[in-house]
Each structure stands twice: as structure tokens, then as C-alpha cells.
Length: 175
Image (cartoon, rainbow, N blue to C red; front, side, top):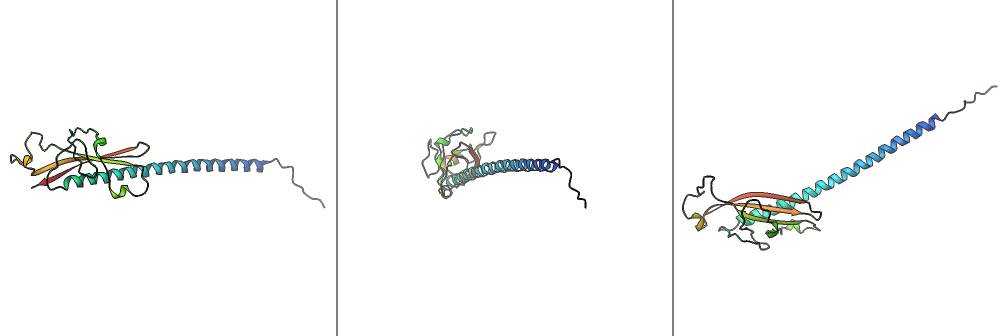
């Protein structure tokens, strides 16, 4: 009886297994790098959304406090906390947030926050490009009646220095 023994092996299976292991390792490393990158992107997006929401909240608080009084507000040079903040500034889009008022909404007090939020408003001119008054009756502005327009600005800044600024305009009709 004659037995057939396998011929001498050349190690091809070992070589193919090592190549497959190398490919799987490279796929795993690249996948881990991609997951890390997506994690960072998601974190940055969430931080941008937090800043945007904070600035939006301050903007709405500013609009509410400027349009709530029964008479037009007098402009000031600095703002007091928790009060309407109408600055006597030229609305040439100067960033005067250091003179603004800190946002004091309820959502800014929930949990630890590293966001500083301020807002301010400035009166907008009530004239049309040709210089006519918006309300033609003489003396309406002095009497505090008519349409008054305001520009409200808000800024939110986190500890890393990232900033979101928003601006809106609002009008209030006083009778």
C-alpha cells in the first residue's frame, strides 16, 4: 500500500493571510479616523447651534423689551441690567456689545454655561430716502406718537472665542 503525502508547502497560505490581516487593519484604522472626524464635526455643529440659539434668545428678549413700553424709550449711553437697552449710537453697524446688557433669560441659567450673551438696540432714522417724515404730522416725534423703528443686535460668545452675532429690525406704533 502506497500513501500519497503532500508535497512540500511553499507558504502561500501564510502570505495571503498576512496580506488579508494588513488590509483589515488598514480598514479599521481609517474607519476609526473617520469616526473621530465625524465626532469633531458633530461637536462643532452642536456648539454653533448653541451659540445661534443663545443669540436668537437674546435678540427676541431685546425686541420684546424695546417694543413693550407704552411710550418711546429715551436712548442712553450705557445699559442697565434687566432693563430695555436703547443706546444712543449711530447705527453705522458699530459693534458696541460691551455697552449692551447681558441676556438674563431662563434658558441661559440652565446648567453650566460657558456662553456670554449680550444685546443692545439703537433707534433707526424714521425718514424716507428723500428726507420726508414717516408720519407727516408735525411734532409727532416730539409727542412720542407715530411709528418708531429699532435695530436690535445680539452676540453670543463661548470660552473658545467663537462668536455669533444677529441683527433684526422692529417697529412699534405709538398712539
